Length: 86
Image 1: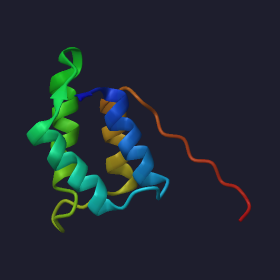
Image 2: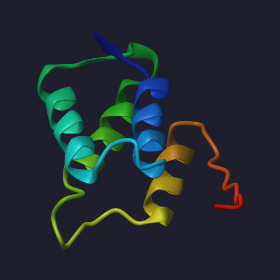
Image 3: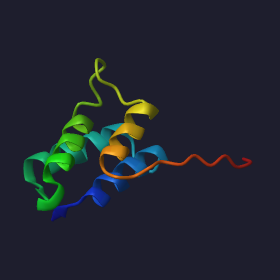
Image 4: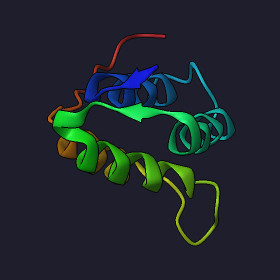
């Protein structure tokens, strides 16, 4: 499977929407680094973002909202927050 900027952004969005856990995001990124093929056009940016996600479960690195925002920006996306009544 070819991993694109959209693929990586969708995984980050799924994490931010609580659709996947941090552990699932890290597992996906580790698998993607070892087995995935990156879109040639953006391979460097994609690999950099996915590598960063791969260490998000290490206390020294973590993954904050600001980190996600920066990673999405590197992929060419801008996150938006929507607040709705519970």
